[in-house]
Length: 236
Ligand code: ADP
Ligand code: MG
Image 1 (spheres, rainbow, N blue to C red):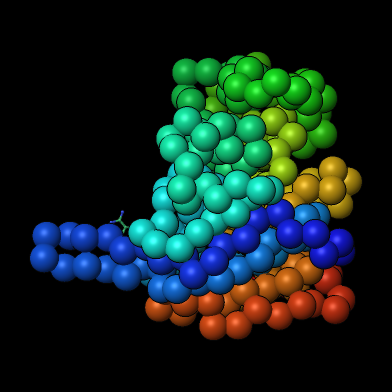
Image 2 (image 1 turned 90 degrees about the horizontal axis):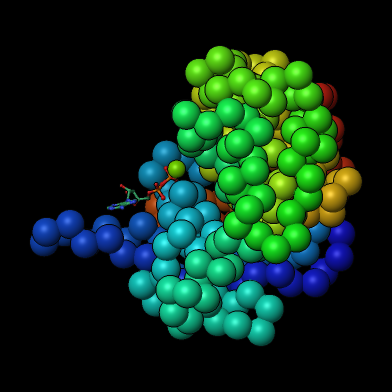
């Protein structure tokens, strides 16, 4: 693992105000994301995992603190720059796939490809995730696992620096979940992409280069995994 920092959070917080109540979803958080690493973020429901991931992906902005990407502090940049970051540098994977239902698998992937200047070939990426013969199917004609593979292709086609996955196996059965994790490991290893997986399934930590544990809006521990395990060999 290289030690080059890709993204750096410096004392980032995120508060949500609901009427008279303020929820401190993310308390002062300092974290470095290293280029090429596979980081697994663990924590119970409500601990702030999605809040952290959304900030890392430029989908949300901190209430205070800084987020550095390259030489830029994105927490101080305007909407246009944040949009550019989200569009060009980040791929997202969600628990419920978030595909566009009236576009085919190929069209979903091409739509993402069209957003960036140097996309990878859509057909090639769909083939890599095992969907060569499903490209012209609509999401409703695909299983959950197949839809999640389309989502991986949609994220990977942009060739993003950072692939952010929020509970990517949360809606899938055991075997399919492991298949998806295997594909994410492949994106990390073969394409050298930085991958962050958020999960409440502690077993998934075994595949990580590094884990971060969250509790009540804080990262309470980060740990390097000296011997990451292939997802096929993980059991839960
Ligand atoms: P996790 O992903 O670990 O389950 P979240 O980051 O989704 O946790 O949420 C952390 C806390 O912030 C929770 O208490 C949640 O209710 C609150 N929260 C998250 N998003 C919002 C929002 N948009 N508005 C208000 N509260 C929110
Ligand atoms: Mg969440």
